[in-house]
Image (cartoon, rainbow, N blue to C red; front, top):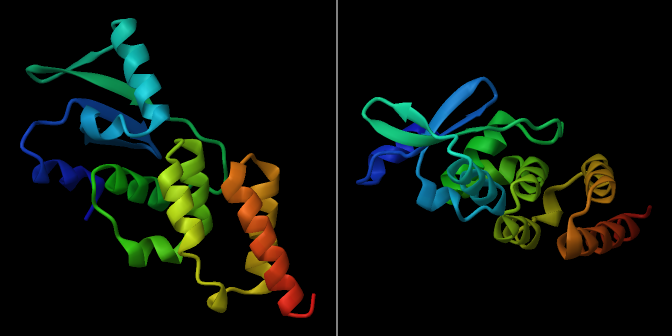
Length: 161
């Protein structure tokens, strides 16, 4: 289900427009406030009177610009779903690194923790582990990153590296 259809599951009309990856997403402030990134952007918009008119309703407009190559349109849309209480475990498990990077950027720690703890180490390749190590050491992933480094080292040791 695309994030744009998320709003049909909630009674109140969307009150935030988020632009990223060349798309505009109409979402709900209450749900986005779960992310410190979005909370800060919403509060800044409200404080500086930067809201825009969307038909007969005023809404917050947020332009997201990420330059992290790990953050993809798919992981961004899955994060928006998660913030709106819709989780697609199967789709998220297909792109765990991208989900981790997206959750880190938008400061949604519970997604990082759940992705790291649900990781299926039986189905990963050495190349994947090397990329994972590069990702979590290039940026600050906090305790989750430290745990993933330890698990990655164990994986590599157990597999003769």
